[in-house]
Image 1: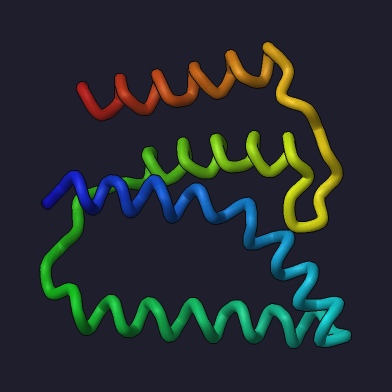
Image 2: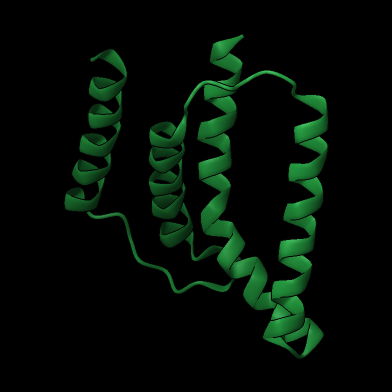
Length: 111
């Protein structure tokens, strides 16, 4: 079951880069960054409330894995210019850096 929570942490981190682009588009659509922030925080609050009611035991820490997921997704978002971001191609240096981040997370999990 812990593996499911760790996978969830990775996926949660992976969707973070999309949030900035989606919030920017929402601010444009609502004609107000304040309203977009309100919607974002409201949705987050509702989701966290539901999770706090449903999950009654402590979850394993997955913050490092979420950070690795966020970094990997950022590389993908930049490569393809998703959700309105400018394209920044994945250079060998950026890919090597990503591999080092993932390796670091694995080492932290082991020790």
